[in-house]
Image 1 (cartoon, rainbow, N blue to C red):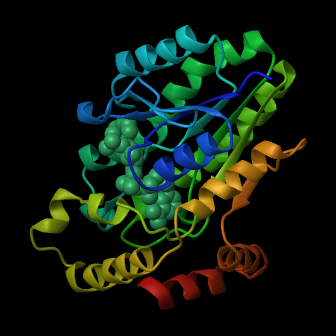
Image 2 (image 1 turned 120 degrees about the vertical axis):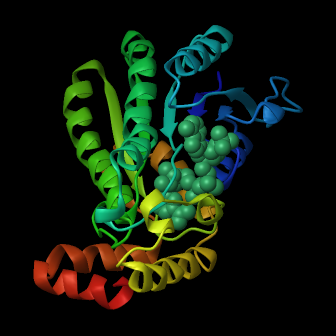
Length: 272
Ligand SMILES: NC(=O)c1ccc[n+]([C@@H]2O[C@H](COP(=O)([O-])OP(=O)(O)OC[C@H]3O[C@@H](n4cnc5c(N)ncnc54)[C@H](OP(=O)(O)O)[C@@H]3O)[C@@H](O)[C@H]2O)c1
């Protein structure tokens, strides 16, 4: 049987890299993407190697080229894992237009850009699955990561809409929401410009970010996300959204049933 083709954005490190390696070991043909030209390798070493191609979600041309390249080589894209993303920290008041644009440009506009490039191929084939990588922060908004949390809430909302739009073509979408995961996300986190130059939020922000960083560094191995995605791909009727890890599933459940004010108090006790 022909191998299914998977395109994973942001496969140079962390969750994307783990997914790429794990899924290629499970006999999928995997194309990963990176902005790092030194990591580009079109040759596959052995059956399970991942081909790495250039893609910057902020650059439309690179998205078009990357999707075309995969399609030209394989004639199909069965699964898109929309994983590329970054985090920006700082109080909402300390987030300039540019900070907000940069965060949304990567995590939302970039994700939609890739979806829109892949969908015509999937529609023509009459099958395909889009897996968006959201975050627990999409429904548990974290202080001093308000804009990041907003991008992940937007991705959650977008996934719901997308499912109802693409079902008529035989296509499916799902959102996978990891909790704290040990990746380069922590060192790659950017601070908003204003939060670096003396802010009334400074002491609480620093405390909150240090809690976040500690949780991430002690977080789950990204392989847990890869295994979750593998299980989703094996299912005949995939779920709409999946929270990764037992601990976060319990937290997600509690957050659905407790009143808003209590939810807010819980978040404040952890981060604020
Ligand atoms: N780590 C966590 O605790 C956690 C929790 C929940 C959700 N997530 C989400 O998981 C996803 C992956 O993050 P990670 O934790 O694996 O972090 P990571 O180790 O920093 O990896 C981020 C990946 O995204 C790519 N990327 C960043 N900006 C990009 C852009 N403009 N265009 C294309 N690719 C870009 C990077 O690739 P290059 O630099 O090579 O281009 C890299 O491969 C993100 O969407 C993140 O929001 C992470």
